[in-house]
Length: 227
Image 1 (cartoon, one colour):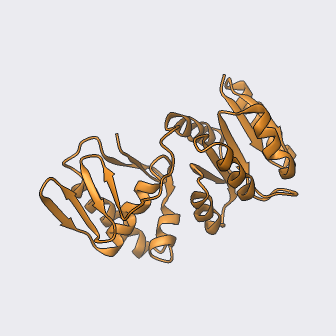
Image 2: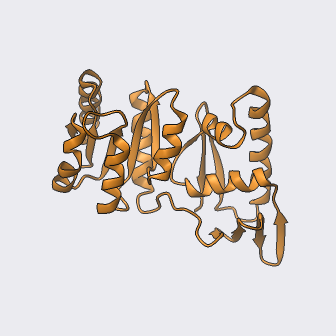
């Protein structure tokens, strides 16, 4: 049975989520006090963590940071307010695997949990040394070049940053709005169409490796599958 550690101070919401997950076969340990969360994590050794961000005594970011010092692989999903894009960015930087904006449906939560567990051990990793191996390709971030064999494809700055974002968060579903705000500064209709074009371009650049796929999650965003 999958053990879920759920830290949430909205008790009504917490009760609904806990009971819903338990009805789907999950074991759920819930805590409302952020100050107690890390000690409980040490004791129960959960398979996955669901962390609200705004918590009494210790926020979800601090808890995640402490958990990552204890365990680098356990999936962490942040729960965040709808308008807090900066929370999403910070969450990824702290090693979060995914995030869900409130309010959310149980169906979405289940999918996100299953996705995070499926990719356990392949969590968010930063590109180090200015390069990364992506399937059959070598991505030279500093030069903005994508290589396969002897062929080199020069990327634009935005293409390079988009590929970097997808790669570093490849175990997560990334929201379109967050990509737009991070790379374009806002999520206007014009920029949204630009993002569609850039995604199409990256798919064409990566077509020589069939194991690589940028999956569109309808109504949400994208997930980068690397095999």
